[in-house]
Length: 206
Image: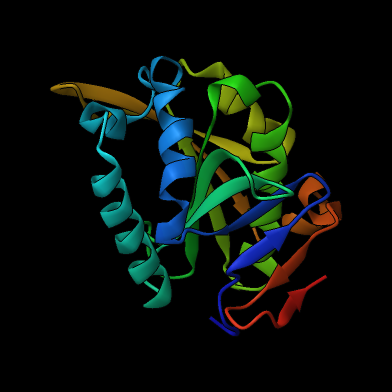
């Protein structure tokens, strides 16, 4: 990466930032209120419900990986940071020079455009701060709500990887969407006003 990672990103309606263990009660409440909503799509819900102590430990792991530059997992908060409205990430699992964006939204905050807004913000960070060459979004082909987001933001549907992932003991198809650095300037994401900050509060992007 050509610059430090963005620890905090601000949009008009959201704060998207690195998790801190002190966020555990807020994310705990958000997930417990959303299990039925998330259960059909998110493999990690199989390990729920976690205890608050387990949640704290998980956030410590997320923060450690973030600080080490291994993976970049963010919480999505309201502007006052009094509620967790979801989670997202700029994941490094697809390899060098790539980021994969994943997202979930709290059940009582769906249909407000927060997944699209937070994803657009992370796209800007991926291309303008991290300087990657490609961003991917992967989702279940039958999860139309999830697929709407890359479609809105100018991604290309590259097709379906058949039986690519394991989910509840059986294979599940995965739809792959991609956006390249050369395509990014013409997308809606490039026009989203954001501010991004490093770990010390220094401005990376505005």
